[in-house]
Amino acid sequence: MAFSLLLSASMLLISSTFGGNAVASSLPFMNTSIPRTNISIPHTHAPIKLINSSVIAHDDGCVHLPIVHSTNVNHFSKKRGVQLQLANRSDIAYYAQLSIGTPPQPVFVQLDTGSFELWVNPDCATVQGADAAFCQQVGRYDGNTSLTAKSLGTTKTLKYGIGTANITYFEDTITLAGTATALQAVQFGVATATEDTFSGILGIGYGKGIATKYKNFVDQLVAQNAIRAKAYTLALGSKEEKEGVIVFGGVDPSKFAGPLAKLPIIDANESPDQVPRFWINMNSIAITPPNNNTKVYEGSNMPVFLDSGSTMTLLPPTLAATIAKDFGTDKEDDNGFYRIDCGLTAMNGTLDFAFNGLKIRVPYKEMIREVPSNPPACFLGITPSKKFTLLGDTFLRSAYVVFDLETDSIWMTQATSCGSTPAALGSVNDLSMVVGACGLTAEPAVTISSAGGTVATPGAGGTGTGSDTNGASATASSVVVPEPPPGSTSSGGSPVSSSSQCHPAVGVVWAFAVLALVNMA
Image (cartoon, rainbow, N blue to C red; front, top):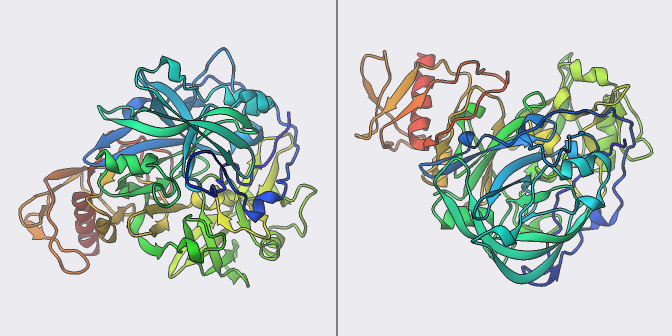
């Protein structure tokens, strides 16, 4: 069975028009062929199942949706007697489950911050081997069996870094599993023909008036009052966890520590490809090997965009080669990748990405792509690109990222995990007050009163009045911030269960702020 490394399987090439019968235009990078590495991998067989809807929450203005890596076979549905054989490109992406139609039809789609549209129903006959087996697991939507389906009759061709999809637009209900809420008349694409794709895609980039002519998935969450703040937060989780969470309209303070750093998104007209993506300025990349002798790479100050649809991180060839040399290789293989010693995954070094005072440290293990072949093969999670620079999953697993579509900002900090406490944002202005919970020594619960911002902590013996960083008092409905679930960790430990409830963010913010003050006393 062949394996191939996916550079950017779901990076959308924006259409030359916003809608209708349009064909997506190509970025320069996409005119080049994307190499594949062929490595023999033993077959693996495992039963698989749907995500438990009880861990998908919509409450108090946020939607808390688990995302899973395709190597996590416990989260995919066994259908038609086909057993999942994870290999090839299908094992290097992150997926979310949606239920479409009436009655609901569960479908897994690849989560992609680098594109803008939702579509389903890949043609599994156009992929082979493990990709075909995986394709048969992701579910299919049949508009003929949905009581709420409406075909809009318009078509479009979407082109990606690898693969294309010819779609016809439909409108239908999308149920947010585990809640009583369903989004009505959401526009999405149903594929009539695809090439080299093994799942549909949930594009969560900019929508109506910017990248599309219609309201996309994120637009509809706001328009139908499922969320109040047009922002979402992404925590992919570590390679060991194999799953993470996206919170639409909220944050999860149990996925990071300390405050979030605000970074402006570069205007599309000033960006390298003139496409409205999540472009930000990166100041530098450095390497900190186990001996702690940090080295900053020359020529690493550049615009990059954040793309969950790309497994690899793409950097200019000279910079990529210099980094690869520090990982023990001085050249690309025949397919354009840097094959390295798998023993590096056990070392404590990091690659350090700097953004205007913020530093995200990516452990060697998270930056190395491990292929379960015999013998094992490992590749640096960075690949050279002459015309495109992006930070893919090999970077994003180590970052907690808020995509703020209202103020065109990225809020970011180092990712960790100490439980799950999803919290709704009243507005994106709340982000400046958010403080991560990890690393704080929490009491079993903290109560926030609605009267004058008064905060009472069990065992504190009194009350206090909180204020934000600008001195303004905070008020919130009374909420209780739950203690971290049993078995949770404060610094990137074992996986933890997802919460089934979103709490008001301001209350959560002040709870953690009080704990921080108590710890400093």
